[in-house]
Image (cartoon, rainbow, N blue to C red; front, side):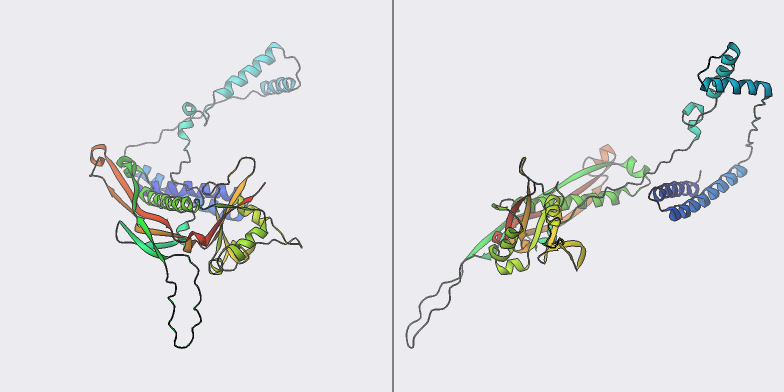
Length: 388
């Protein structure tokens, strides 16, 4: 079998799988179209096979003589009568039992596609090596916090201390001015940490697979980077004191009173699936949903004009055993958290360095360098809503 025919057979298997999926979804017209395309591929494969066999000298196709069977009309009638008596649970005589037993033996001698030695080895299996990626949420919280690129392993940034600013005092003519209060500052220090790992991949696997395995691994490493940075951000937010929320009025109070107006202006509501479900079931006095779609992002919901960012429960879990508390982190995360980025994740591979040469592997290394620090944690409130 040449490369062209192998490619056609792979395409045929993909078309057949696609047709089955479409038929299962009730998309009959599309399924028929894909089936027609599969039939065209099958015809092309058959033609290539015939050409290859014709082009091979000295090979003759053996002629298989079909088994000659003589059917006895009387015996067929006797068998029919015995079979019907069996269905009616009536007793059979010796001759009728012999007819039934002979028929059973004849049927079991037939070739079966489900048994390998009886012809199953001749039935091709539908095997597709394409990696089907599971659809799971990997939303990146990095886009909701402040990202500060840095050029060294450690350092600091200066932040203004949160203090009340007093007004100027009234002065009279030709009097000395009093000293006024001065601004206060504090440093935000960072210490970059390296995170990463090595994945050895068999060179035999890389050479034998018909899939772009390295491209898939690159996407998989990108998911790990998102999970890593999300974990660092959520661990920092989790250090906030938790505030019990008893309903929508408490959420309104956070937005209207607890947060500074400038923080409320850029606030989001970060919650998990349980918290979002609770919000999504709240209605006004007329029975209308309180959540509204975001006009800039129709797939996202808003409450009081604030975007709702939903993480999966496995990344931002609900706590409690008897009383279930869903997290609701409300505020401006860009003012609350800063991610010091020394290096976006990098991927390198080798098949000669380290242990890869000795074990005939390609070693893929992924490294990223960052630190996550609090900038102004007063910009967020970590609330917990009871959902049961």
